[in-house]
Image (cartoon, rainbow, N blue to C red; front, top):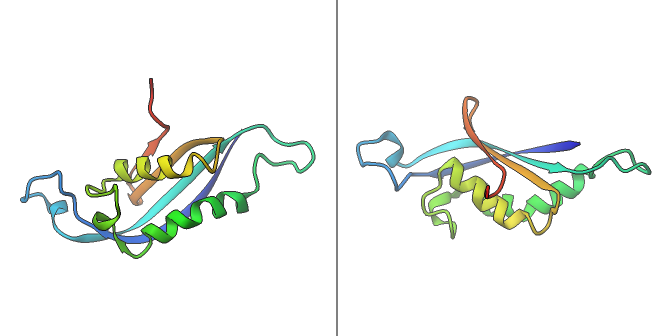
Length: 120
């Protein structure tokens, strides 16, 4: 079973890996949607895989680092694409959520990514 908790954050960024003529090279902001997925077995005693409050608590320090920030100034996010944000979140969240299976990051209702960890 896979459960998901969704978070929202407001942040500004500019993409440093694109030509200066690309619109995303300019400072702009998004209402990001972050989805944290955890896989596990339904626990018989409580009937859930994990309490959503546990996911919220695990993500809280990362949300504080990202929400209402200029993402380019966050260490490790010098080029804050959706893909890089998802990998950044995964690396910091994985130790707190061993069942972490995916991190989704969307910068708009129709553009985003899903990260499942490094595929070997």
